[in-house]
Length: 368
Image 1 (cartoon, rainbow, N blue to C red):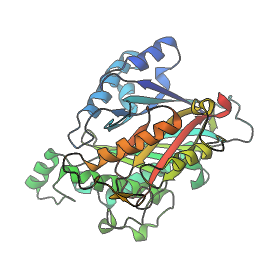
Image 2: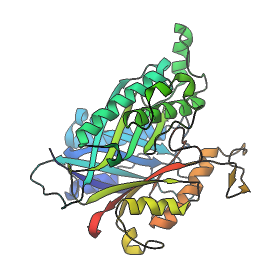
Image 3: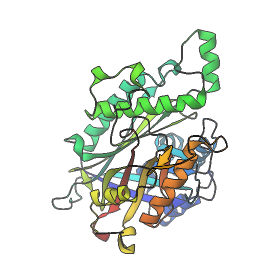
């Protein structure tokens, strides 16, 4: 069955602001029954105790329940990244999907296909370990089949959001005698992100399972995926997967491309992702091509030096290194695409080789 994907970006005045999406629903531009996923940025701290992510999900679910019912609204996957440092603007990008074979494809051009899948709940003792890797790999495999992926080269972005360890997990583990990967909730974010990224890499054949182990997670960073983007939050109990690919199932005006940022100020990597999605330009993209960019999703890698010059990203005790990196990468990406409503998330464990970070770009083909 073919699918037509819609991409709808709305501004947010606060983590609980749902007015932008509701206006699109009332105008008829968005069919709430076709919504499948949301990827957005909130002005939280991005840490283990960032309540803005849960608030944003709950706010949209409550609003949408009036249109499509509570059960259907809770089935929509919400992926939030806290932290809008620098010029980054709080926003949400919503995806709709209509399965219909009657829509004609763009001749010779695979279109954007999106599949949403979920894992079972991840027990606390499995977070950041091989059972989490395997569950994510299974779900990514299902997403590839649903999206009509015939080869891993068609996959350009796999967003995974899953659980980290919370204080409640620590209490339960202590009472039950269960061993956890760490007893630091903030440190558990990295282990969770790494395990989920390796799950993507395993499903896409980027790594072989015999090379994976609990000991390799967040240690052997040569094991990685070029298209995974993972986040962890205390609001999650399972892993939610949003896979994006260009396939023969994809209809509509959108296509996606990806590249790797070699550091937090790599404008050339942004250009490469735009060109991989189908935009053609020689130097900086002109305004008319910037307007064809529907969404950008990137990771930000902190580094002790940039282009041979020392930075304080990893030694600053006042500002977390992820906030430094998000601010820097967000400014560079904004300067290229012409909008600060871009998704930039911190933490690149097993997401591209060490020192690099993934970036994906959705564009409207032919200026549609």
